[in-house]
Length: 261
Length: 261
Image (cartoon, rainbow over all chains, first blue to last red; front, side, top):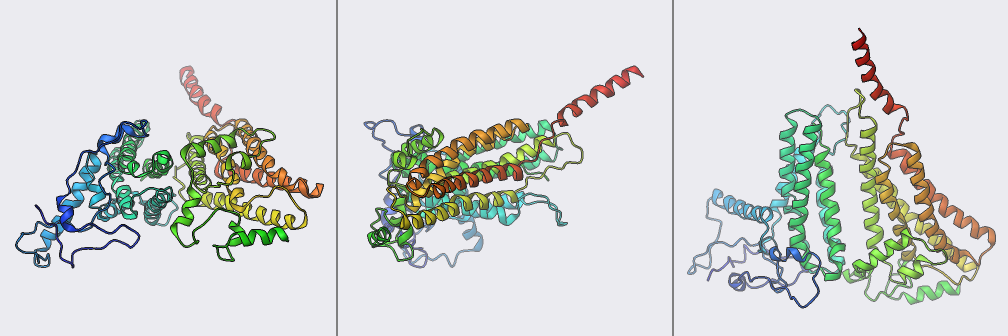
């Protein structure tokens, strides 16, 4: 049995509006049970994604504590004495693991259980840095500024989360932000590819390649985030909750596609 | 004046400031709780689709509010239809300008991201301030003349929000750079959404003085006309009718000149 870090200094209690967190021991014991979807009810929307989405009986809340490999005899394990490199690598590994979950969505609720906002921040800053207009001489380029991209991404994610909660979804605020932020990863990859392709000069063929890449990555983002989010909505409102996600990634894709250096 | 007092006394749980605006709604939670706002999003997918269908196919004699809204006004439709319309207008305007100026050497494509904020201001101001003014006006007339039909503020916001839906496909079709096509589209969209609005509000002003009733309906339709024509004029450059023939004729002429020499 693996004990997660239970020392009080490490645990971060989530806000009062969320359900009380589980005990550390229970979290260590929880296994990922295969999702059971009742077959008696009529085929719900997005049922094809059921094999890569979470099941209803896994409580969708999580702790922000990164599970530290603790020695069982020593409950007072502090991470203060470890080297800086070790700390950073641990966090980076957690972020990287979630990137893999986004790129290859399979049946796992790691994104929801151990949510963090580092990944979305890294992705958003990377995207905004690459999207901002390159001319620094004050000439009106028309492209989005760094702050505009930042605001669009975070404000958009907050609005979608609020919308999903108002419609009656039982996902927590930060979990939803985490999922929406991580699912920008395919579009960030598309931005990188577009920048590389643009180095070869502009032209119709160039544009066709970029269009194809952006469309594929947009579909990937929407599929990945729908797989994580659709399960938390009441069945007769799934489309209402998913449409704003579609609009959000569409706007980001448009910003990527119209980027001109 | 009795009607006003009746409405105020019914909304016991709201503050005096919000009571007149939201009176008559079936709210039971105080306005600072989350559940209060959830009651504005109490719609299912099929209900939203039904309301959109009702705004696209106005049946003479049928009232949009009584038929579809039926004392369950929602804020989901108005909010997301306005958001989609903002992006539809900004993106279509950008695309259409790009297509119109495609052959010109001196044209440098810019994404014009700032137009999104301008479009957002215009559309959201129209969708929320005009219903506020109309509601205030109807309340004032109600105190003078006893009207059988009266609408709450949210129902008016709902009607205005759903009536804007027709402009989304219209904005996408405005990409076609032909003046005649654009004006035909404007006429069709105005016809449909104007008739939805007129048929909704005619029963509310019918018992009033003839002139006042007609002036109200005319003002509603005029504001609608102003919105659509203004958006067309500001976001979409005027297409020059003789632009395309000159770009295709010039290469032929140069080829012919080269052959003859």
